[in-house]
Image (cartoon, rainbow, N blue to C red; front, side, top):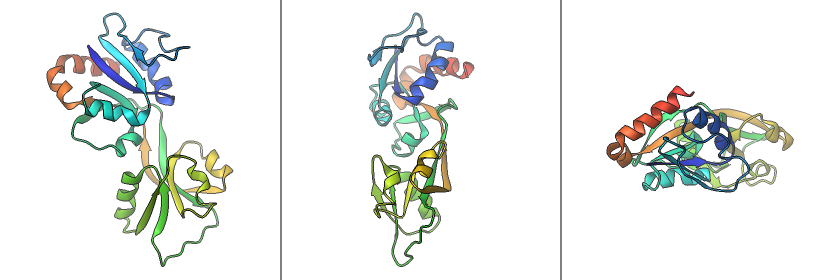
Length: 207
């Protein structure tokens, strides 16, 4: 049996139809329930565990899950050699962008202050530009940070941009495109190779 760690929320909602078409989960299995562990559908051999996105790569890295389904934004912040990124499902798409106040003027005598939860990704982006930056890590409500003077810019996920506009911010630079990816534990790919490859093939055929 394989275990799949699955990001709850939007990723789960958009992944379920693919999993159902692949015959890996039972139709309607995830509706109207607070259960977090779902035993394999008939002949699927795949147990599904639903969790927060940030925890998915942790479970896969340590082998508690053989596979994971999670947004690329999460993987940017959790690099490891213990899993492989094997399949882009092309779902839950969004962008990671920098944003700031429309009329902002920056003090060039000091480092740029950037608030984000994507510190690793942002470090690489601004370093490539040769920009000196001081990062402020926040978990949520980033849109208010520039207005309160905490930072000059934010780096965050942008979908429609409505939340930015509602808080007086404008999107600035594209940093990364995001979609949901299937990751596979390194050891599982060796020990359960046939089962893992069969599962990936069924997912690929159901896109």
